[in-house]
Image 1 (cartoon, helix red, strand yellow):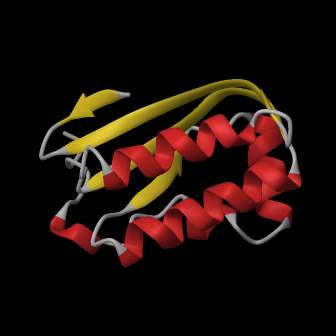
Image 2 (image 1 turned 180 degrees about the vertical axis):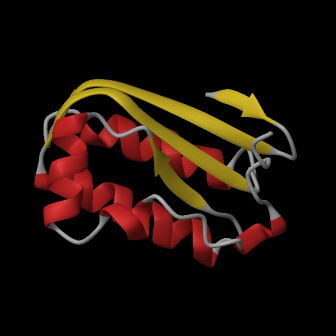
Length: 110
């Protein structure tokens, strides 16, 4: 986890995320919302080489958990393969757009 301005965190994920290791991803994402009480969690998927349906489901459930906990969670920089799968499932736009919940918004680019 890497701190961002305004009580937000960035979580960088790397490698393959499958049913064999998805519990670790869930733990980190839920901890960011529950224990750290981040207003927003940005999940960087640039280094993810593969993500199975279990992992995608955990991203969706983590986002729902964040929103119901007055926080926010979204993905950034999905690798090409992950981008394609999320797009095919109709989740790319949903998961890559902050809801604005928790009162946090990403800094505007110059």
